[in-house]
Amino acid sequence: MVLGKNWQFYGRRLELGQMQRILARERWFFLQISGRRRIGKTALIQQALQARRHDKTLYIQIPDSDAVGVVAACNGYLETFGLEHRVSSLNDFARLIGELIRQGYVVALDEFQYFHRKQLSDFCSYLQAVVDELSAASHEITGGLIVLGSLHAEMTALLEDRDAPLFNRTTDTIELTHLDIGSVLEILENYADLSPERLLFLWNLFEGVPKFYRDAYEQGVLDAPRKELLERLFFASSSPLRNEADNWFLRELRGRYDMILQYLASHPGCSNAEIEAVMADISGPGEVKQVGGYLKVLSERYQMIERRLPIFAKPMARSGRYYIKDNFLRAWLGALQRPVSASAFRPLEQLISQADQQLQVVEGHALEDLVAKIYEEHSRLGLGDFALTHRVCGYWDRSDVEIDLVALNEDEQCIRFASCKRNAEKLAGSIVSLKEAARRFLAAHKRFAGWQIEYAAIAPDISETARDVLVAQGVIPQSLSDLIAVYRQ
Image 1 (cartoon, rainbow, N blue to C red):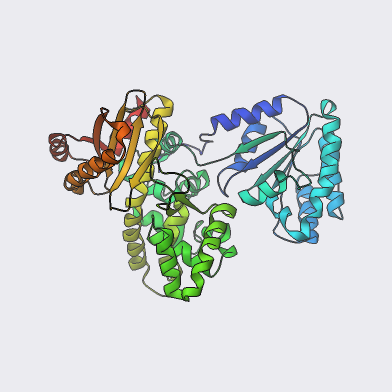
Image 2 (image 1 turned 135 degrees about the vertical axis):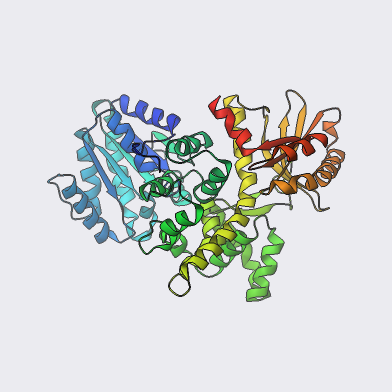
């Protein structure tokens, strides 16, 4: 661990600027902040309020409970924040929010999506009346309401559905996604190292979730050897991430949902037909009819999975493939869950080694996503050697054409085909098949006739000898070290 450096606030420059502009208006606002758990929603609020030295703040985390539980939690937070007010009902709670905002308070309600539950739904009607009163007197009010939520579909139902009491009431919206690659590199530069192996290892586990990097920092293992980091964060009885996946969302999913997620974790990029075949094999042919419903819930309600299409495919193309969206969930289900659950019954060192070996398999799939994000970020920032005019995607078809990455620059009429391998020694052997797949791709897409064609071979690290071999094959060698070096130029 790099000594003498306290944890800082990383990234979020655009979102922080938006929040600061909202606060600077000094008039009524109703802000919605959405994003997965641990993504930094609360930290963003804290950072913005601290910058303005705003001391009239009330934060309440809504429990997954009934009205009595929510009222009790509210009173507990009121006491914690030194306020003398107390409430006895959901209606009281809504009225108190309005009273405090009129006094210049910023009130933040976390896990707001729980008000979508039937036993709490009346609260939104009570809050609607309060919000409408505040909006009518907006020029007289300097406070505001922030609602934070981690389940996108339920937040949408509460705030954006036309029949919802709070429809069209928000004044501002912020959607928090993962930290960008530049911010992750800044964390590594401050507390660990910028080696490509370290970047891929941590990004495969944590992606751009700032809380996970901070957990590793607090445990003193952000720069530790792989197995030590895994032991401290996942396998010890007090490990901060040991129960993270269950506490996050998996406890809400049982049966078929869990089976589908497990299969996708070990078979990323599988088709709908493959999922149906597995479910039929496990539960019988009658289960096949339900697969579409399971996939829709996992995709739309929980946003745990996504259906990707090959580049240039039509939205309804049958060639879609399913992936787990979140790196942490994929790494947990694909490599960590079973070894961690067996830690009370088998030698710890053996289980950690097993988890680490399986993680390296998962990293092979994560590398393509990481490289695609770096390419896109380079282009957005004006860095690197390839300006994109189209999102980087893979390409495949039913005749077994498979290309890891296809990058497009329509302005300069240049197209780049890339092969990604976690093990650089496998790159040279993949070039013949890459070029053949590219030839078949170009034959199927005549509009690229006359364009400049480039080939790239990408791995975490590429030796000089391997680079020479790739260059001789007419291929651009790119290591992760090459790709991240431009951030420091």
